[in-house]
Length: 236
Ligand code: SF4
Image 1 (cartoon, rainbow, N blue to C red):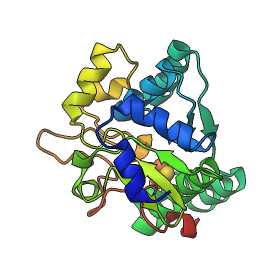
Image 2: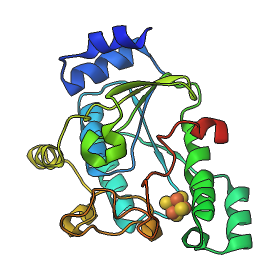
Image 3: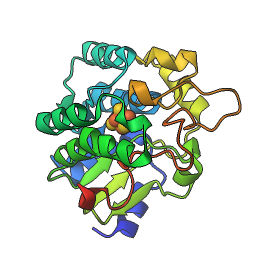
């Protein structure tokens, strides 16, 4: 289906209407990937509470916060549903840590990308195997880079449609929704963590800092791990 036609079909509908529509159009081939951040919890709530037939998957890098696992656990308990977990290849992790130690990512951008590639990009490739529609919790105002994206995109490298149901939502909208619907959320959000990734690579942000400033804070430039960047599939 042409992107423009699909966009016309989805325009003007609610989040849950669009999730249902896409799960029908791409039956058994629609996946939502969660990292248990605030936005992801909103989407999980829609999928699980309305029994929308979309697979919910997560990437466990092995370096996540305790609070993230708590959110994972609280979510499956509340909604009595399963979340499919993808892990990095054991041999890759063993080789990386044996050769470079547990904190190689602090030493150079190249090392950091290597770690993200092993712990995130390759598992994501498995999570998206055979998938035609990938749903994610990206919002436009999370970063300047994301502002330039669109709420519905065709990912040429992975040959799939990407849909961001909360693209136009503000962070306040997200938090309001979580509160009103009693959705489990990552308690680190209460301590100034807005975008939450791996424990050694995430810090809380200070008032006025960019939304993603707490990710790989020792690096300058774009704060992305490659999951949503073009070419990630080819690199994998
Ligand atoms: Fe490794 Fe940090 Fe990337 Fe996690 S965020 S995969 S620990 S470099």
